[in-house]
Length: 159
Image 1 (cartoon, rainbow, N blue to C red):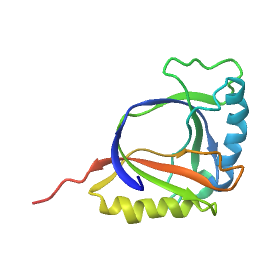
Image 2 (cartoon, rainbow, N blue to C red; image 1 turned 30 degrees about the vertical axis):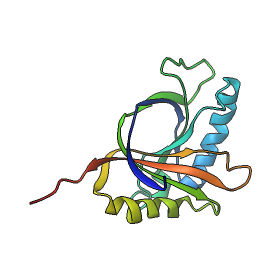
Image 3 (cartoon, rainbow, N blue to C red; image 1 turned 135 degrees about the vertical axis):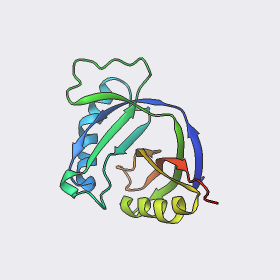
Image 4 (cartoon, rainbow, N blue to C red; image 1 turned 90 degrees about the horizontal axis):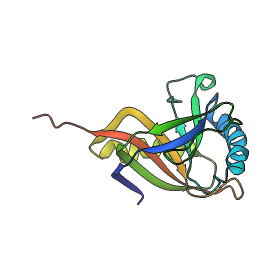
């Protein structure tokens, strides 16, 4: 599955918001979220990062991201959850791009996703959500297997 359009169900996640350049703040967010998740035995859950701003149009210091871990629909935040909030990724149509990143260049992966794949798919971003889903813990090896997701809508054909 290098690139595909698919329907995804809603997913409940626990997220920790960070602000600043994605290259540094996402890691910092996981440094807060991972020990919290380990205490709750969530380390085998899905690990994601939501991106709330386009780094090509937003000052890097203002870019917001939310490192996240999936939780059950009925999960309740415990008392030791300062800064962590629950939210739901919406169900819907998504473009997905599966890639292995070995050089730390996540920005290139996103650029390829949007310019090479999504641009020629007949779909466009719908303004709702984009995120990375990590399929392994690349922090140990420097090699990340990732699926990039962007919520999309079909482009209407003009006749």
